Structures are given as structure tokens and as C-alpha cells.
Figure (cartoon, rainbow, N blue to C red):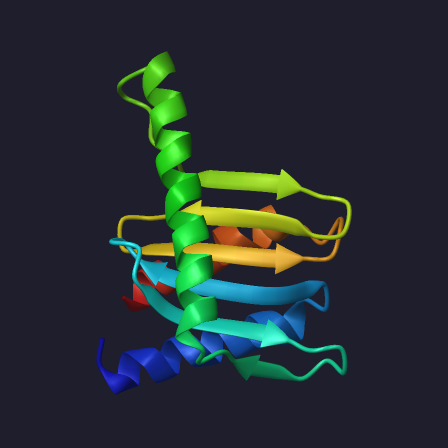
Length: 130
């Protein structure tokens, strides 16, 4: 991925954080599961990129494993189904993983933060960029 595309993606992610106060983290992986960008918001509301490979790899692995598990589950139902969105509502955080042909987008929000809607919208925006 070249620098101009990465900067455009960063702008989209920053705008997404600005428009949705409930978001605590956004992690992007490519279609092979390799981490692309991970951003988080600290307790003071400051948004910053996470550059620690231990952390970014962990979130990429979580998104990839969740997608793989979802696809295996659906394959027992029908061979024609594909995983497009995984949404988990937890006590402290909601997590949504949106899957497209070019990107896996993981969004973490506070409860009732509509992580599934944010992940789908972000995935759609990024599809047009990549």
C-alpha cells in the first residue's frame, strides 16, 4: 500500500472517530489477515495510531480467526454463504468485524455504540479507496 492511500485511509478513520464518540478502537487488516492500521482512543479522548506489532498482530489475528470461524459455521449451513459481518455485544464493549474482499475492519465501541453500523459504513468507505 502506497503512502497516499495510507494517508487517505488515516483521514477516513480519524473522521470516523470524530463523528462517533462511542468508538474506542479501529483495526484494519488486509484480506490475508495482515495488519494495516490500528487506531485507539485513550481515556482523554486522544486518537492515536498503535504501532506496537504485538498489539496490531493480536487484533489482526482476532479478526482473521473470527472470520474463519464464521465461515466454517456458515459452511455447515450452506456452501454459498459468506461471512460479511460479525457482531458481539459484551458487558463493557461491543465488537464488530466487517469483511470485504479487500479489507477486514474491526471496530470496538462502548456498549450500544452501534459498532456493527460503524464497521459496515467504514468498510464501504474504504472499499472505494483501496
